Image 1 (spheres, rainbow, N blue to C red):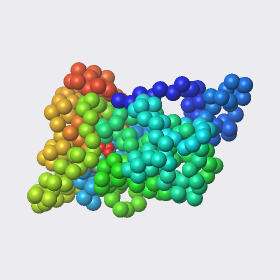
Image 2: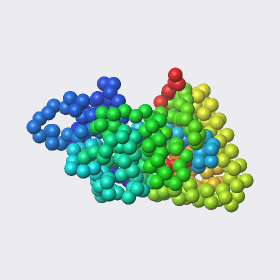
Image 3: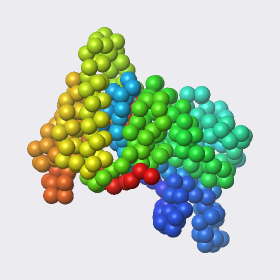
Image 4: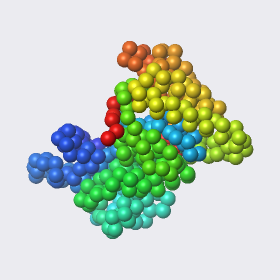
Length: 356
Ligand code: PMV
């Protein structure tokens, strides 16, 4: 897992303060933040900051690649962040990954260089002389949308440093271009959720639909610790679909029907109905061949400890699972997940939301 390793955490704290005063929390130009300019602090002050959350898929992964609906939501507890510093040339640095990429010389399929170039192209600007430092709390290759969040954080930081604006649909489209490098033929659900930062009803090729969340939904997200690149799971499902299209189309239709019923339950506040729907979605994912012994062990442990339902989330084969919990069971289920081998457990809540 990549861990945050910022030397200047104070600036991120400052950013949170700015956000609570009503300025966008997704990006900030540091000169707007009224940090006292002591003689030494300017040396340690980035030009701008950007960030984006992780995401979970509640219902519909894999089937969404084949045109069925999916429901996904941001996970604000884990975030990717980008800082922009003045420099001689444009580079991206991922200290946690021990990577330093000179953007002008990078290969066209380097995802970090690509998002920088795409942002410059969208704004009709030349490559700026910036050092773009990234870090992320979102585990890589684990179904939490780490690649999309890093791209979105870079775009947001660059927009703030350029003093420019792009709407969410455009930012999402830029991030989608980079998702193609990570995933081959992504549905677009990851970029949509991390950029819009709200629960969405998503169908490939259509604008995302925000929808109402009538009652809070409490979830635990547990990591198997098994890294599983989405590209491989998606590729395997594709091969299996080519060999037996009738069987897979039937499975995808069944997932689409689960997602449809889940949306109604979320909109009407029938949280109790979501547990069995998660279990049903998990059975269908296992039938597609994307579950794993580690995921099944965590799902069994969560259900045995009182979770109302549980399923893998994302590409599967490893990565994360999610469990629906109520207040009474959150501690029990969390401990059971750890005892069953989870390397991390995150508690998150999808808050009520209205659609205007
Ligand atoms: O593993 P993640 O977080 O990238 O989620 C992938 C979701 C899939 O439906 C399996 C693929 C896609 O492009 O939607």
